[in-house]
Image (tube, rainbow, N blue to C red; front, side):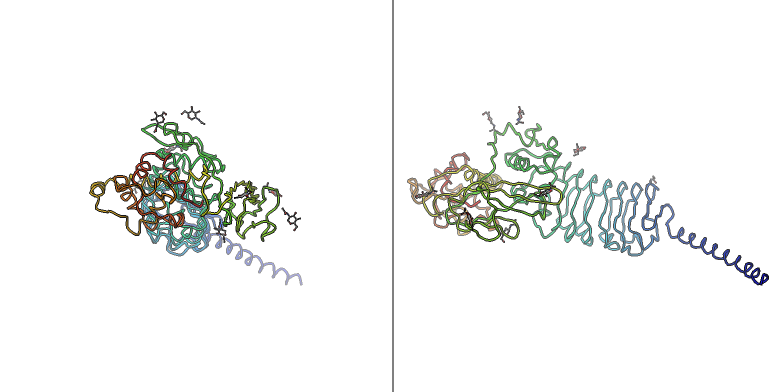
Length: 493
Ligand SMILES: *[C@@H]1O[C@H](CO)[C@@H](O)[C@H](O)[C@H]1NC(C)=O
Ligand SMILES: *[C@@H]1O[C@H](CO)[C@@H](O)[C@H](O)[C@H]1NC(C)=O
Ligand SMILES: *[C@@H]1O[C@H](CO)[C@@H](O)[C@H](O)[C@H]1NC(C)=O
Ligand SMILES: *[C@@H]1O[C@H](CO)[C@@H](O)[C@H](O)[C@H]1NC(C)=O
Ligand SMILES: *[C@@H]1O[C@H](CO)[C@@H](O)[C@H](O)[C@H]1NC(C)=O
Ligand SMILES: *[C@@H]1O[C@H](CO)[C@@H](O)[C@H](O)[C@H]1NC(C)=O
Ligand SMILES: *[C@@H]1O[C@H](CO)[C@@H](O)[C@H](O)[C@H]1NC(C)=O
Ligand SMILES: *[C@@H]1O[C@H](CO)[C@@H](O)[C@H](O)[C@H]1NC(C)=O
């Protein structure tokens, strides 16, 4: 018995030795699979500050986090990794000397959600460079030398939420990134601060939903001062949008080489900005959105009488739509007043008040009231037209003076009537001749194309192809008087 057990003991000893040597072999193998110069912790590879001028070869297939920051990489070629790193979630490449990225560089890493390319030497972003990164949520490109954003560099990045482009040399606002919501449907943050932006597409920016503007950072650019910019940012400030409230001091613009706060451009004598009321005429329908700073909030509307608005039409004419907008059908004068939207979100709650004004007559009825908000809107459209004149009139001036165009053609007539309609009952109507004022009008309307989208705003019955010249002249020189000329053209806000 004893002998037998002793025998067993002798046999056990080499077995345990064998097992332990196997263990050593295992650790040895996993050490080998960690590329030289990197620290490996399960699926994390840290290869930072190693002076690497190439991406280490044979990266493990299971890598989820790869940190190559603070190295000496200059190129990211298509073959930077020999195998597809389908589990890679985060790739850190900041503080290198990258100036070239192959258009196929991201093919092996389709699952990437976070990509840091900040503090490199990138100058251009090629067409569709990031388009294969369908899962990417955050893209850091700040502190590079990017001069222009290719219109399609970020195409089809359906999950991209945050795009940081600050501290580059971008001079043109990439309006397509925010305007066409189908391109980057999830984008909520676009940082364009500290670039070389001079002009902003103010009208497009104003139309964006508040949750988009809330994350649109534009500070520390040398914007050129104009009243539109002041109006835009004053409204954002009124709405307490983070992009403005967090960087008030850095929001400035330049006018004759002097710096002004965008909220207070004293030299330009801009008229004071007022928040507009929503206006409607008797019997019309009106939809007002609860324009919150966050997406996916639960919204509730309360009438001026402190009654909750229901999802279906109750006693009144108002109801709340699926998307949280307030809808009036056949609005009545009694419906006017201050409506409040209470929005409840995960991070914070919001309260929004909207004033609704209802004229006590239908759209085609008598026009006797002139509302300030209304005039402001007309003035706004007018200034767009003035910009168009400025941009397009100069080259065609001679041609215009020659008077080769006695009547405006079909395409112009709709938009021109919107801009220069004289009401039928106006005593001055019909008295004008074809003088220089008229010629000018035709000239500056030339660039308005079908894309202007203004047709819906005009009153069809008021189309006068040839308005009198005197008013055309006033329109050119003095926005204030122009507003009153336009006062009879109903425009829906
Ligand atoms: C980085 O690479 C460049 C050229 O490839 C080389 O001249 C330089 O010495 C490298 N720097 C370091 C810190 O390795
Ligand atoms: C403003 O932008 C310039 C470059 O355009 C940059 O050098 C500077 O650091 C920025 N300032 C701030 C406060 O971000
Ligand atoms: C606007 O700027 C002027 C000086 O440029 C200053 O005197 C005035 O107080 C400012 N107003 C506001 C409302 O900040
Ligand atoms: C602003 O108003 C002042 C005085 O009213 C005038 O001297 C100045 O030319 C105006 N500036 C502009 C840009 O109209
Ligand atoms: C609306 O109808 C409810 C009952 O259906 C009634 O209690 C309420 O007073 C009505 N409100 C108004 C403003 O008529
Ligand atoms: C809400 O829905 C209505 C009707 O379906 C639509 O007209 C309106 O534009 C929508 N508003 C928003 C903010 O999506
Ligand atoms: C938002 O309002 C709801 C109910 O009105 C409340 O329960 C919730 O605590 C509020 N959330 C925040 C972040 O204030
Ligand atoms: C609207 O106008 C009509 C006459 O045109 C008048 O009888 C009515 O009282 C007015 N309603 C309001 C609310 O002012």
